[in-house]
Each structure stands twice: as structure tokens, then as C-alpha cells.
Image (cartoon, rainbow, N blue to C red; front, side):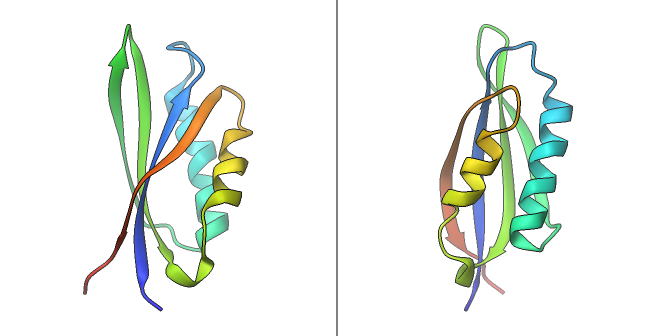
Length: 92
């Protein structure tokens, strides 16, 4: 099977949520789920000071759906929602 690149958008509860701490917690869960430590993160302005956290990471396609990971990240304190916005097969 191939590797896939997943883009996940995490919305915090409020602009007061520490995105650095949220990012660290999410990356721990992603690494435990995928077994890879290959990722890229960015913050995307939404509105009124609220920023979404976008994390792109690699996982084995054989793992299947990301639903358990989304639920796990959604349980982190300060997370309002988690959504996979893109899934692509990696090339090379």
C-alpha cells in the first residue's frame, strides 16, 4: 500500500486557547496513530482573532479511516472541532 498525506483542520473553542500546547497534544496523538513523525503545521486566521490549526501528516494507507484519530484529537481540552480537509496519495 501507499502512503497518504492527510490535512487536518483543528478549530479551538476560543481565541484564548494556547495553539502551541494544542499543537503539541495533537502531534503526540498523530504520532501514536500513524507511527510517523513527519508533519507540517500552520495557523490559519478565521475571524475575530480566532485561528485554526492545520496539520499535514503522512500515514500508511492500510491504516484506513482517520475517524478514531479525529475523535481522539477532538477530546483534547480546548478543541471545538476536527475535520480532515484533504487526503492525497504521496508520490515518490
